[in-house]
Structures are given as C-alpha cells and as structure tokens.
Amino acid sequence: MKSLKRGKRAGNQARNITTIDATALAAGAKHHPGRVGKGRTFSADPLPTWFHTIVDPSKNPPQPFRDLPAATGLPPFHMALETVLTDAAMATINESGSMVFHSVGDTGGVNTPTQIENVAKYMVEDFAGPDIGSHPSFFYHLGDVVYYDGETPNYFPEFYEPYMNYPAPIVAIPGNHDGDINAQFPETSLAAFVRNFCAQAPVITPEAGDAPRHAMTQPNVYWTLTTPLATIIGLYSNCPEGGQLSQAQIDWFQAELESAPESKALIVAVHHPIYSAYGPKPGSQHLYDFLNSACTTAKNRTPDLVLSGHVHNYQRFTGTLAGKDVPFIVAGAGGYNLQLHTLAKEFHQAKLPVAMAGGDGTLEKFCDSQHGYLRITVTKGEMEVEYFAVPDASAPATKALAPFDSLTIPWS
Image: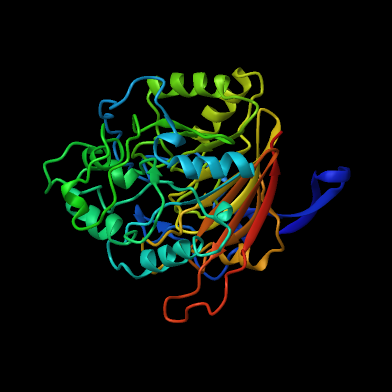
C-alpha cells in the first residue's frame, strides 16, 4: 500500500489518501497459495478488488430476482411524516427547525436477540433527555428486518419484541432477506413485509403479539418519505447480490429525483451498498451506474447522502455522482448476529482515508468490531450524521455515548 495526495476539501487542500492495491498484495503473498483452486472455493477474500464491484454470478450464485407485490397506495408512492406523527410532534419540528431520526439496517436477531436488543436499548435512551426537540422523530430501517427470509412467524421475536419500548414510528425499505422465500412457508415475496409496513390502515397485525405497535402505512415497497426538512427516497434493491431494479422502479426514481424540492435535504436509501470494503459483500457497480445515470439525467441533481445496509458493520465513503462528492454510508450493524463483517487486516493497518487501486471512492472511517446505529439531525441548511457504536451487552455504558464518527453535510 502507498499514500498519495488525492482529493480536495474546504480551502482547496489536498488530502493524503492511502491506496491499497489488492492485485499486487495477492501476487506478493508467499505464505498461502490462495483461496481458490482445482474448481474449489475454500473461503471468501475479505479484500475487495475495488470499492464497488460487478459480482460474477458464476462464482457468486445470486438470490433470484423476486417479483414485487402490488402497491398498497397510489403513485407517486409518497407518505408524509405528518400522517404518522402527532400534531404536537410536527409542531416541534417546524418551530425548532430541526428534525432528528435514527437509521440502521440488518437487525433481525435470528440466532440471538442479544445484539438487536442491546442496540435498541441505546436508541431508546436517545429519548430520555429533557429537550424534546432533540428526540428522534422516527427510525428509518435500511432493510433485512427479519431473517432469513422475511417469515411471518419471525416478525414478533425479531422486530416487534426488540422494539417494544421504542416510542417512535419505524419505517423501512426491504432488504434481500425480507424479500426472499422460505420454501417451508407458503408465502409470496415480501408478503409479511407488506402486511406490517405497507398496511392500508394502521392496524395491529397478529404477528405483533402483545406489542402495541401499529403496522406502518407506507404506500409501496419503494416509496418516498416527505418531511418538513428532508425528502427520503427509499429504493428496493430486491434479492440478487449487488441489487436489481425493475424498469418501473427505475422510471419512478428518475421522476422522484427530478421533482425532489431543492429547498429540502435529499437522502437516498437502498439496502445493497454502492461502496463496500468488505470483500464477500462488495459494493454494487450496477447500482452505482444506475444512480450516476439518474443524477446526470436530472441535470446533476444529486442526493446529499446515500444510506445502505447489507454489510454488517459501519463504513463511510466519499464517492461521486454526476461529478459531485457525495457521502455514502453503510450502516448494517443493527444487531443481526454477534459476529460482524470484519474488514481485511490491510484496512486496519492502513492510515485512513483509503482508496483502492483501479477504482473510485474513498473509505473515510469504519467500525467492524461494535454494533451501532446512526443518529441524523437535519436543520435548515445542513445535516449532522453521527454513528454510535454501542458497548457489549455484558459491559453497558455508565454515561451517555459519544459518537464514534460524525459528519456535517451542507445541503442548501
């Protein structure tokens, strides 16, 4: 690996960015002949060739593309925040000029509830302060709510019970595990997700058990949340690794991007990441090309932030869309399992920020040893994005958590 001056920030100052050349490292490895040989694969390579990669389906057999369920609402599939918050909560946002929300993905604790319950506990503590203007207004889930295949019986133990005490609305985009199908359960793709997140009325579903949470009333599995300070466009990237979008969703997104008000922050959420430094789950060149093309067609209208999950850790990148620097955040450490996706040792040994030879995107910060969540504050002119890494459940914090990483994004 080497360091070079690349990229610029405020004041036109060049930055020292470490470059990792995966091909050169593999060629120089003398201690092991490799992970693949004689038609057999023994383990995944934790070091990606680039930060976003075209996944070879012959080496990584994909989950199939699943047909989407019928929309439960009308085009253009908008849901206004005021339809799920009280008048008093909306007045607080409007009067303070500030809106706070949580975001993370990959929470369904199919193997153990310990991690999801631990993260949820710290998220609930964000509502304890005396300043109600600083309390989160909602939780935007980045997908993979229920493992392994979105089964109805798993909604109570993996969603309703862990968030029993979470006092705000929870909205979501589906992940690949939400959309896949378990052959033992005769359900169509996303049937349980639609019933619990895209209900036509705020009912309490049978799978909620004794939890008092009403089903969310999103109009579709891809949809736009409109708020006083931000527009959040949520995509459904389906089941195949790297994501796959129907033409109808592509056309819808283009229209949403072009019509998004410039007087508000613009956030795009999609489960599969565009950039990733974790080799077995690389970023998606397919999704990057789609977003870049859409932004270019929309006369360089770009999101101020792109949020993803899928990889079970935290990663923050700077990438480009239509020639403009955009922060891309992977936040998939919401509690699925004890073991997170650990980046290759080369990233732990390198001085951040890091770029990959042959590709684009810059890894600014990562956390692959602790679960955690995002807290995003939107005001009139900027967003503050904070990632909180939570301590292990066996050693709880004795004081308020400090953010592991933070970023201020001007959007006006």
